[in-house]
Amino acid sequence: MSSNRRNFLKQMGAFAAGAGVFSALPFEAAATNKKAFFKISLAEWSLHKTLFSKKITNLDFPAIAKKEYGISVVEYVNQFFKDKATDTAYLNELLKRCKDNGVKNHLIMIDGEGGLADLDEAKRKATVENHYKWVDAAKYLGCTTIRVNSYGQGSAEDVQKAAIDGLGRLGEYGEQVGINIIVENHGGYSSNGQWLAGVMKGVNKKNVGTLPDFGNFCIKRTNEGCAEEYDRYKGVAELMPFAKGASAKTNDFDEKGNCIETDYIRMMRIVKESGFRGYVGIEYEGSKLSEAEGIKKTKALLEKVAGIL
Image 1 (cartoon, rainbow, N blue to C red):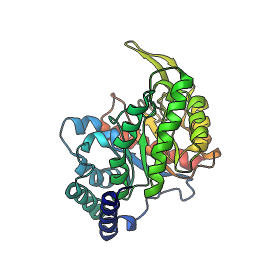
Image 2: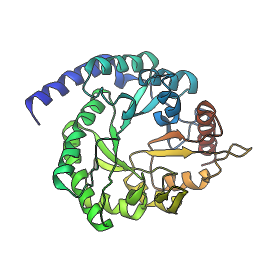
Image 3: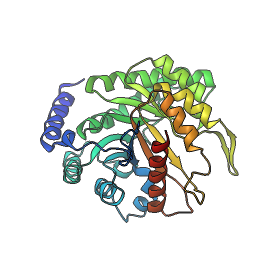
């Protein structure tokens, strides 16, 4: 690590400590159930329509999570502040808003920085380095984790080998600053639970893991929709041993408030039996309900499940 980068991180760490971001009150998932085995966080993607329409900005997200949904732990998406990774004034303002609202930063979801499993070694190395600034930004904001993508084009075996290399290199950088690097099942090979579990075993680093998404198991997509889908329950079971978070994806609900596409009792039992005790992030992605309604229904569902399990 260069001396300039060390100094940058030192300055960022000093500010974060001064802002008291780590002293934010922890969120108790399912407040009515003290025995809940997980904690609830809110993924910013749940508000992507509102964000893309410019009705709110990334800076508004922490206060909205706390005031409108009673959630004190947030998961950012870098698309909504993609040019701000090294903008200390911007990050300071974001930290201030977190402190003012008692919000804890958990992770940043990273897109648009290249394929960590690109078969071209030079491109793969460039992609790894593209992520450094987001590792630094996550550290600055008091996050523990960044979510990345392990995509590449080629045979399953070749892309897996490249993914192990790319994630391993980024994992080494993450180790230096204390940040986890996690991969979501996000389409293509990564939505094959067995394949992604194999990547994790190949990387074999404590700070490199998975972010199982309950709904992202489409391996092959066409204009008509998903042409090949991996079994979501099998996939989550395969990814949970490496999980450092989980993504509670929802789209539609029945009249009783249950998720139509995923049996949450079955899914969360898999999560619990894996020994996981971390954050489960709400990620509403439906279109029939408003984003606000979808977030609230997902939160209520998770709280109901917590009371059962």
